[in-house]
Length: 124
Image (cartoon, rainbow, N blue to C red; front, side, top):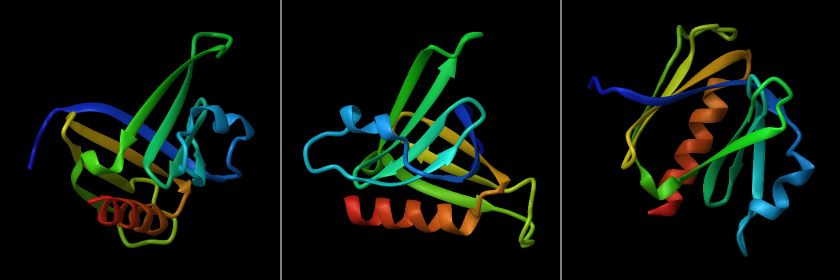
């Protein structure tokens, strides 16, 4: 199933949940885990995936992507079956379009696959 990718993120490694995520969350929403991206972080919550992308030279401007789990129609995971696979990736097909998540060698693709499964299957 080949479709144009609307955006692509890279999850480098699992990290502590950022302290400043609170103001973005809605009532009843809780952070579950976070991953370091190239310039910022991605946070799985009980309701959505929030990806923060610092921009510009100073990184002071921040773009925030919010992907409700209910908008994910299908996903796939791909890796070589090795513990440290530098080419691992997750693909999400959503109502908004196709999203690729590259998984760095410091992140566990099976953990991310499980998080997406838990989130999507519990949101519908």
